[in-house]
Length: 413
Ligand SMILES: Nc1nc2c(ncn2[C@@H]2O[C@H](COP(=O)(O)OP(=O)(O)OP(=O)(O)O)[C@@H](O)[C@H]2O)c(=O)[nH]1
Ligand SMILES: [Mg+2]
Image: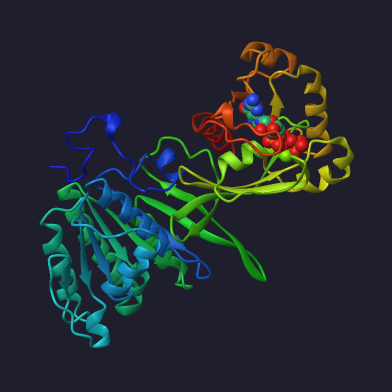
């Protein structure tokens, strides 16, 4: 019997992905039963939040999760998880292999199993296997590198293979959190060849780490390689792992609704405005379906054109906002792509003010904008027309905003 909810008696459509992390879920389609996934981090970056997020995703979708914990105490582990807004529930059981090392006495509860002597290989192995035989959907080992340090690498691998037999027999799955502290290459290679999938986490380093990314190094249940090579992310408290786009430009002619779009898409937007028009820029942070993006909005008035090139620098995608009632401004919209030097980047066109009399229809808009069929155009409308204020950005309908965000985000990795 499969212990994975979703793979057992729940239709394909209801099947929840099991990383809880955008891009990994889209492309790896979760972790199938009998598979072991290695989350391998370089020493400069942490992988623990990946563990928290995977646990959270699974326990909230009804999957029983067993965590083998030797990195810290269960209490501080749970406190750390709560800071990411991942509270525990009845589906979580932790095997405490930490307290015994520190001499702190730990007591068994409904959610904690205790290993009295974590130095005793046999006790460690027997305890995990006994517990797994009770039936879990997922085992998380945090951390596998500490296990290798504690005993030795070969033991850790043989231990993993013994565990894997139970995982296969019980049709559950396992995630190993591993930090490569500079182990011998042949040991690491052996580990990699013994797991079904490896997700690698690395930092972009230039004296300081200014970004982190993950990549799928291996995945034996996919017929084709994932379409992305590496994905920038941020670990956000609360919230967890978010695929991260540091700069998306929002540009387009005067008054089209750029500031309105940014304020509607983000919780904390700020604008440098005067008399309702943007005179410097807008900025807002968007959190949406496992993604985070920083949006930068340009002014539309031509007198601010000297700013455009600077604002467009290093953008990786663009929302081009136009007023659906003003086709005479469309050449200006294209000119703004050129002036921001973002022409050719992934773009989604926002045809705003679709509520106004005289708003062009979708096909007319595409034709007049000379849009290639591959480019997505989303029509947007003010949420509440009675609240449209000539001096303020307007709230646009959430469903329109979501359509636009998902169309661009899908293209960006
Ligand atoms: N009727 C209607 N009015 C809208 C809509 N979206 C925005 N507006 C109004 O249009 C005006 C301009 O909106 P902004 O978001 O400031 O436009 P902008 O593109 O940032 O303008 P600049 O920064 O000056 O280039 C404001 O008065 C908004 O209230 C909409 O969908 N329908
Ligand atoms: Mg504006």
